[in-house]
Image (cartoon, rainbow, N blue to C red; front, side, top):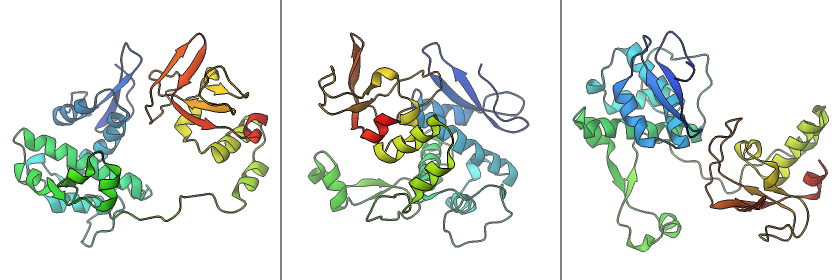
Length: 278
C-alpha cells in the first residue's frame, strides 16, 4: 500500500501500481475501505480526475460525519449548504463553520467540487441509495449557441447535462494575466538561475505548472529546424506521461512518440529567445 496522508480521520490512501501509475481511494480511520467512495473512485481509475475527486470527496465525507448525516438521508439542500460552506454564494443558514482555517475555494475548484458531488450521488442512486437525490441532481438544459459551436455535430444536440450545485460561471472577456510590472518585480525577488528560468518560462510560454515540471530534456527543441520536423522555430513538446519520478502530470493528452532519441507530436509551443537564454 502507499503512504497514509491523513491520520485520525477519514483519509485518502495512495496506491502505487506496477505500471508506475497511482490509484486513490478513501479509508476509514481504522484502515477499512470506505466502500461507497471506493466504488465511485474506481470509475475514474487511471486518470488525474481520480486524485482530484478523492481529495474533494474525503472532505465532504468528513463533513457528513460531523453532521451525523447518512448517505441515504442527504438532501439537495444539504449539498447546497455544504457548497456554501466551501465558498459558493448561497442564501441560507450554513450552520457552524467547517474548517474555518481554510480559504474559500476558487470558482474553478467549486465547479469541480460540484461535478464530484453530482457524480458521487448519481453513482449511489444507481445502486438504489438515495434515488430521490439522484433524480433532483440529474438535470438537463438546452444547449447554447456557444455549446453547439464547440461540439461535433452540435446542431443535432437536444440537451446537455446541468448541475444544480454548480456556481454561476464568471464570463471573462480577456484571459487572466499578471498585473502590469508583476513579472519584473518577480524577477527582482528571485536569486537563482532556476527560479529566473521558471518565472520566464511560465510568463512567456504560458505553461501550466504541471507542464513545466513534466518536461524531459528530449522535449526541448531549442534550435531552429529541429530533427522532429514539427516546427521550424525553437519549440517545446508538452507530452502526457504516466510515472514521472516527480509525479508531475500534464492534463492535455495529444498523441506523441519517441523514436531514435527524438520526440515528435504532443502539444507544441514556441519558446522565446528569453526562454532559451535562461
